Image (cartoon, rainbow, N blue to C red; front, side):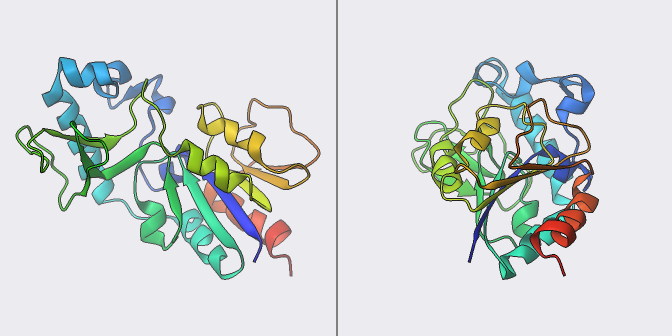
Length: 229
Protein backbone atom coordinates (compact mmCIF):
# COMPACT_ATOMS: atom_id res chain seq x y z
CA UNK A 1 0.00 0.00 0.00
CA UNK A 2 1.19 3.50 -0.77
CA UNK A 3 1.85 5.70 2.25
CA UNK A 4 -0.38 8.76 2.53
CA UNK A 5 0.63 11.23 5.23
CA UNK A 6 -1.90 13.90 6.18
CA UNK A 7 -1.22 17.17 7.98
CA UNK A 8 -4.53 18.45 9.34
CA UNK A 9 -5.29 21.75 11.03
CA UNK A 10 -8.03 23.80 12.63
CA UNK A 11 -9.97 24.19 9.39
CA UNK A 12 -11.11 20.58 9.36
CA UNK A 13 -12.45 20.77 12.93
CA UNK A 14 -14.00 24.20 12.35
CA UNK A 15 -16.56 22.59 10.05
CA UNK A 16 -17.65 20.47 13.02
CA UNK A 17 -18.16 23.59 15.12
CA UNK A 18 -14.89 23.84 17.05
CA UNK A 19 -13.80 27.47 17.20
CA UNK A 20 -10.30 28.51 16.22
CA UNK A 21 -8.49 31.41 17.83
CA UNK A 22 -6.87 32.53 14.58
CA UNK A 23 -10.28 33.45 13.20
CA UNK A 24 -10.81 35.85 16.09
CA UNK A 25 -7.70 38.02 16.07
CA UNK A 26 -5.81 35.84 18.49
CA UNK A 27 -8.74 35.37 20.88
CA UNK A 28 -10.38 32.16 21.97
CA UNK A 29 -13.86 33.10 23.17
CA UNK A 30 -12.47 36.41 24.47
CA UNK A 31 -9.42 34.87 26.13
CA UNK A 32 -5.94 36.10 25.25
CA UNK A 33 -3.63 33.23 24.28
CA UNK A 34 -0.98 34.60 26.65
CA UNK A 35 -3.43 34.18 29.54
CA UNK A 36 -4.46 30.56 28.95
CA UNK A 37 -2.03 28.76 26.65
CA UNK A 38 1.51 29.41 27.90
CA UNK A 39 3.63 27.99 30.73
CA UNK A 40 3.66 31.48 32.24
CA UNK A 41 -0.14 31.54 32.30
CA UNK A 42 -0.15 28.25 34.21
CA UNK A 43 2.21 29.65 36.83
CA UNK A 44 0.31 32.93 37.04
CA UNK A 45 -3.28 31.67 37.20
CA UNK A 46 -3.73 27.91 37.31
CA UNK A 47 -7.47 28.14 37.98
CA UNK A 48 -8.07 30.22 34.85
CA UNK A 49 -6.09 27.82 32.65
CA UNK A 50 -7.89 24.77 34.05
CA UNK A 51 -11.28 26.43 33.54
CA UNK A 52 -10.41 27.46 29.99
CA UNK A 53 -9.56 23.90 28.97
CA UNK A 54 -12.53 22.51 30.87
CA UNK A 55 -14.76 24.69 28.71
CA UNK A 56 -12.93 23.59 25.53
CA UNK A 57 -13.36 19.98 26.60
CA UNK A 58 -17.03 20.43 27.41
CA UNK A 59 -17.61 21.98 23.99
CA UNK A 60 -15.64 19.32 22.14
CA UNK A 61 -17.51 16.51 23.89
CA UNK A 62 -20.69 17.55 22.05
CA UNK A 63 -19.04 17.86 18.62
CA UNK A 64 -19.09 15.15 15.97
CA UNK A 65 -16.72 14.39 13.07
CA UNK A 66 -17.67 15.76 9.67
CA UNK A 67 -17.46 14.34 6.15
CA UNK A 68 -13.77 15.23 5.83
CA UNK A 69 -12.85 13.24 8.96
CA UNK A 70 -14.82 10.24 7.71
CA UNK A 71 -13.33 10.50 4.22
CA UNK A 72 -9.81 10.33 5.67
CA UNK A 73 -10.74 7.28 7.72
CA UNK A 74 -12.23 5.59 4.63
CA UNK A 75 -8.97 6.11 2.73
CA UNK A 76 -7.37 3.48 4.98
CA UNK A 77 -9.07 0.91 2.73
CA UNK A 78 -6.84 2.07 -0.12
CA UNK A 79 -3.72 3.58 1.45
CA UNK A 80 -1.48 3.30 4.49
CA UNK A 81 -2.71 6.52 6.11
CA UNK A 82 -1.02 8.38 8.95
CA UNK A 83 -2.56 11.63 10.16
CA UNK A 84 -0.35 14.26 11.74
CA UNK A 85 -2.72 16.75 13.31
CA UNK A 86 -2.27 20.15 14.87
CA UNK A 87 -5.70 19.73 16.46
CA UNK A 88 -6.12 18.66 20.07
CA UNK A 89 -9.62 17.21 19.61
CA UNK A 90 -10.22 13.50 19.01
CA UNK A 91 -12.46 13.78 15.94
CA UNK A 92 -10.06 11.85 13.69
CA UNK A 93 -10.12 8.92 16.11
CA UNK A 94 -13.90 9.04 16.51
CA UNK A 95 -14.27 8.98 12.72
CA UNK A 96 -12.18 5.80 12.60
CA UNK A 97 -8.65 6.85 11.69
CA UNK A 98 -6.27 4.36 13.28
CA UNK A 99 -2.92 6.18 13.11
CA UNK A 100 -3.03 9.72 14.46
CA UNK A 101 -0.06 11.75 15.70
CA UNK A 102 -1.06 14.75 17.81
CA UNK A 103 1.59 17.46 17.51
CA UNK A 104 0.00 19.88 19.95
CA UNK A 105 -1.29 17.44 22.55
CA UNK A 106 -4.68 15.93 23.29
CA UNK A 107 -7.59 17.70 24.93
CA UNK A 108 -9.05 14.60 26.56
CA UNK A 109 -5.85 13.65 28.35
CA UNK A 110 -4.09 15.10 31.38
CA UNK A 111 -0.49 14.79 32.47
CA UNK A 112 1.70 15.12 35.50
CA UNK A 113 3.41 18.44 36.19
CA UNK A 114 6.27 16.48 37.77
CA UNK A 115 6.86 13.81 35.11
CA UNK A 116 5.61 14.64 31.58
CA UNK A 117 5.72 10.95 30.65
CA UNK A 118 2.80 10.29 33.01
CA UNK A 119 -0.22 10.87 30.79
CA UNK A 120 -3.78 9.88 31.68
CA UNK A 121 -7.00 9.42 29.73
CA UNK A 122 -9.78 11.62 31.06
CA UNK A 123 -13.22 10.14 31.64
CA UNK A 124 -15.03 13.47 31.94
CA UNK A 125 -14.56 17.06 30.81
CA UNK A 126 -13.40 18.59 34.08
CA UNK A 127 -9.86 18.85 35.47
CA UNK A 128 -9.64 20.60 38.85
CA UNK A 129 -7.11 21.94 41.30
CA UNK A 130 -6.26 19.04 43.59
CA UNK A 131 -6.45 16.39 40.85
CA UNK A 132 -3.09 14.70 41.30
CA UNK A 133 -0.89 12.24 39.41
CA UNK A 134 0.44 9.08 41.05
CA UNK A 135 3.47 11.06 42.25
CA UNK A 136 1.26 13.52 44.08
CA UNK A 137 1.69 16.50 41.75
CA UNK A 138 -1.06 18.56 40.14
CA UNK A 139 -2.36 17.35 36.78
CA UNK A 140 -2.29 19.80 33.86
CA UNK A 141 -3.87 19.69 30.39
CA UNK A 142 -1.92 17.43 28.02
CA UNK A 143 -1.44 20.33 25.63
CA UNK A 144 1.68 21.76 24.01
CA UNK A 145 1.50 25.40 25.00
CA UNK A 146 3.06 28.30 23.11
CA UNK A 147 6.73 28.41 24.02
CA UNK A 148 6.99 24.67 24.75
CA UNK A 149 8.80 22.06 22.69
CA UNK A 150 6.77 19.85 20.33
CA UNK A 151 7.78 16.34 21.45
CA UNK A 152 6.00 14.48 18.62
CA UNK A 153 7.63 16.54 15.89
CA UNK A 154 10.49 14.08 15.40
CA UNK A 155 8.02 11.22 14.94
CA UNK A 156 6.07 13.30 12.42
CA UNK A 157 9.24 14.07 10.46
CA UNK A 158 10.16 10.37 10.30
CA UNK A 159 6.71 9.48 8.96
CA UNK A 160 6.75 12.32 6.43
CA UNK A 161 10.12 11.25 5.06
CA UNK A 162 8.54 7.91 4.10
CA UNK A 163 5.47 9.39 2.40
CA UNK A 164 4.46 8.44 -1.14
CA UNK A 165 1.90 11.29 -1.03
CA UNK A 166 1.38 14.17 1.37
CA UNK A 167 -1.92 15.94 2.06
CA UNK A 168 -2.31 19.28 3.81
CA UNK A 169 -5.89 19.99 4.87
CA UNK A 170 -7.44 22.77 6.93
CA UNK A 171 -4.23 24.57 7.76
CA UNK A 172 -2.68 27.74 6.38
CA UNK A 173 0.86 26.38 6.83
CA UNK A 174 1.55 29.36 9.09
CA UNK A 175 2.11 27.50 12.37
CA UNK A 176 5.62 26.21 12.92
CA UNK A 177 7.19 23.76 13.38
CA UNK A 178 4.24 21.82 11.90
CA UNK A 179 4.24 23.83 8.65
CA UNK A 180 7.84 22.79 8.06
CA UNK A 181 6.79 19.19 7.46
CA UNK A 182 6.25 19.93 3.76
CA UNK A 183 10.03 20.29 3.45
CA UNK A 184 10.52 16.67 4.56
CA UNK A 185 8.33 15.16 1.84
CA UNK A 186 10.58 13.09 -0.46
CA UNK A 187 11.61 14.89 -3.65
CA UNK A 188 9.16 14.37 -6.49
CA UNK A 189 6.31 13.05 -4.33
CA UNK A 190 2.94 14.74 -4.81
CA UNK A 191 1.73 17.26 -2.23
CA UNK A 192 -2.00 18.05 -2.13
CA UNK A 193 -3.21 21.18 -0.34
CA UNK A 194 -6.91 21.52 0.48
CA UNK A 195 -7.88 24.91 1.93
CA UNK A 196 -10.20 27.80 1.01
CA UNK A 197 -7.27 30.21 1.22
CA UNK A 198 -4.04 29.99 -0.75
CA UNK A 199 -1.17 29.23 1.63
CA UNK A 200 1.64 31.73 1.94
CA UNK A 201 4.14 29.52 0.13
CA UNK A 202 5.40 29.22 -3.42
CA UNK A 203 3.48 26.41 -5.08
CA UNK A 204 5.86 24.02 -6.79
CA UNK A 205 5.32 21.64 -9.69
CA UNK A 206 4.67 18.69 -7.36
CA UNK A 207 1.92 20.57 -5.50
CA UNK A 208 -1.79 20.44 -6.27
CA UNK A 209 -3.88 23.19 -4.65
CA UNK A 210 -7.61 22.59 -4.15
CA UNK A 211 -9.21 25.86 -3.05
CA UNK A 212 -12.13 24.45 -1.10
CA UNK A 213 -13.10 23.86 2.50
CA UNK A 214 -12.21 20.49 3.98
CA UNK A 215 -15.51 18.64 3.47
CA UNK A 216 -15.99 19.43 -0.21
CA UNK A 217 -12.26 19.55 -0.93
CA UNK A 218 -11.82 15.96 0.23
CA UNK A 219 -14.44 14.79 -2.25
CA UNK A 220 -12.69 16.66 -5.08
CA UNK A 221 -9.34 15.22 -4.04
CA UNK A 222 -10.61 11.65 -3.91
CA UNK A 223 -12.59 11.72 -7.15
CA UNK A 224 -10.09 13.66 -9.24
CA UNK A 225 -6.71 12.56 -7.89
CA UNK A 226 -6.59 9.74 -5.34
CA UNK A 227 -9.26 7.34 -6.60
CA UNK A 228 -10.34 8.47 -10.07
CA UNK A 229 -12.84 6.16 -11.74
